[in-house]
Image (cartoon, rainbow, N blue to C red; front, side):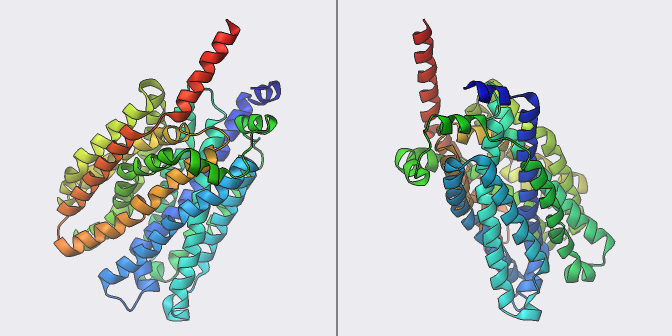
Length: 442
């Protein structure tokens, strides 16, 4: 690393990079999760009022899926500019895109006001959300990780991952607040819009923080060495296809169950188990708060025992919990339902904490934004997006949660296979470079 980069790597600049990454991802995930909660509780009646209750839920979750499908597109677009222009400028753009789309959803009239244009516009805004969050993850993780030293990359990369529990906590808290102070009729009529409109304020805060951070030292070294790739998207597909595929499939055990645990559970709990939605929201708040500790903890442990071992433990725990999860929910006993929701997210965090570094370390700095972002976001199409739809369809056809548990276990099996097959390309190159440097000094 050059002298200038070393000078810039002061504790103040490092803390600013971590703060900017974490605040930005928190806002992005607040927006993204807010949509998921509204899709489960409000959108079926508001945007698909002529459908049966089950069809309305499926149509609402379909718009949720559209956002997931758009995430790889966002990863490809912003990965290109992130690897060519830099992490900082790209992250400012993704934050603005996400915030504007969320704000406009809060202003969108329902089906009874503008007819079929309502679900169409909702879908288009959801696509914009997906593109924004698709470009966000890679840059925010790299901005934080590339400011850290080689022995703490798991911990440093886990801080932006805190955006998930923070975003989940904020979005759930806002919905819970509105449902607590308003009647069900007022909430369904206009109260749900308030959390979406408040996104504008959060985006302004995020922009203030992000504009003060310096560019990643590692990316500046790439530019100084004139090693910037002209077509990073094309190059990463040619050079690292296996890394991209395994990065996507290794997330099956993390992402698919996660959206069952935080989104589908609201539909399952309120319609099948007849649990009050405010109770479920309260339990989700507790689980999200636990994530403040568990996500960085497991990122830190991955620096000690290895990324793959930590991730593998999370896969196994999630598979073993697939049947107990619904068993505890089905008791309808408050304490056991709380345990079910909290433990499910702890097992998720065993994978999510080390996941950023695990995926990013497969790629070199000059292709890392594109490679890590595309691999990470492809999971949205095969895992996160379809999961609530698949769970709802299984429940409708079998009238039982057993099939959903088997679906979770199947996702875990695919993740374990991907973890075993995941190449260590960039780690081996880095180790070879260190050995050559050591021999040169000798």
